[in-house]
Length: 263
Image (tube, rainbow, N blue to C red; front, side, top):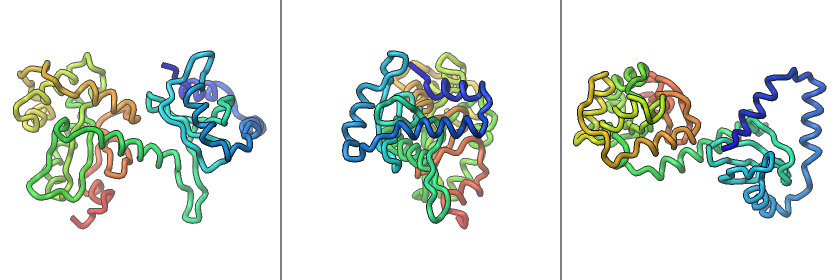
């Protein structure tokens, strides 16, 4: 699969971008924008079906128009995204911001958040390991975890406090070293256990699990999903609005992020 994002970024890092060069690049990109507002649907169909690089078809998942006339947001099947003109002859890599009255709004990140919400909604609760607590939760976070990760262990130690604050924790699997790793086996054993939450706690405490790992489990699928959502490390916390929060977050700070500061 082509990695157009990393290729463009690497090429940009290998050269010095002077103000004049930056201006020339911007002018070149903007010069390619055609007055095609009335043909947005045709442009999105064209990019979705015909976008190619070096003669190879790009694995396009979705194409949407942006507030900038003639510029389209292209989402690849890998989860990577960039911007293109209607013809697919020029690309822009980076975040698109709206200069709103209330300040800068990152439209690219907003789109990613929406994609994460939609993707996670397709994963049933039966395929997650859930720590809900006794009371009805006030908010739910999804945590991609790896039991060999020290900060995952630290986050798991705070799960009882999170539950007390009304925050349910839904674990999903993300073995950082891939599906051939010991972490992947441990996660599969946790999902295969008759009491998966108890097994997850043992795994997070670095206790060896002895149960089977070959049951019908979602670990591989969740690992692939995590990569498509832009997860690069663990723990990776996804808030209800789709915002990705990497790393360990103390309970009081996470509660505040969820609007539960007084919980």
